[in-house]
Length: 74
Ligand SMILES: [Zn+2]
Image (tube, rainbow, N blue to C red; front, side, top):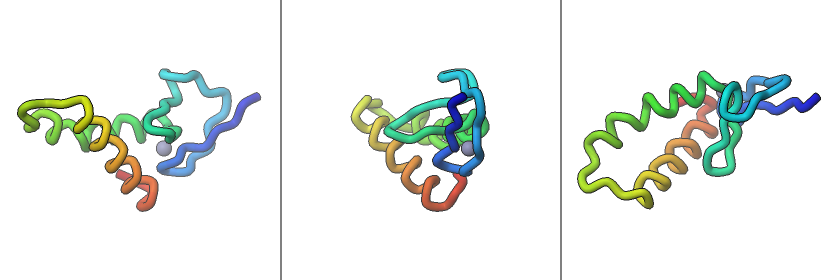
């Protein structure tokens, strides 16, 4: 059995299903609720960004994840 812990909230996840109960972005593992919080926190910025660029988006995701990992939440 694979056991992974969420890099943000440190919750232990057992029997994870990638892209269902477990998500992986920018070298970080995330549980489902942290992934929802991540989307929620970047959405307004993504919507306001004009013109949109993938490079900018990836940096935003990395920065948001780095900050959240330090704080333990989004
Ligand atoms: Zn989590």
